Length: 80
Image 1 (cartoon, rainbow, N blue to C red):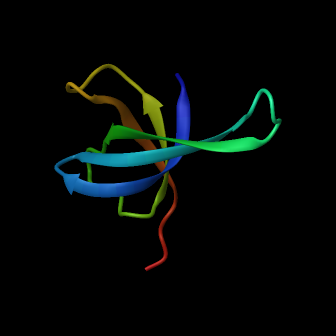
Image 2 (cartoon, rainbow, N blue to C red):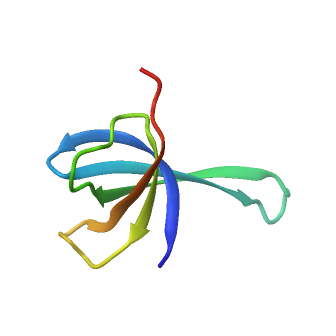
């Protein structure tokens, strides 16, 4: 199972959180590192996440049209 670590940016939906995963890639010609971001919808059954939390998500079966990940654990809570 593939896991990703990202930051929660939205908790507006019921049992769903939006997680932004940021990664670094190296430019082929200029050898400079570039940040790439991607948003994933993840299933949060108990609603334990808040905006700004660092979470670990894992791939799973499709739960809806766009939701293919579920929350594995909260790595770090956001400062209040």
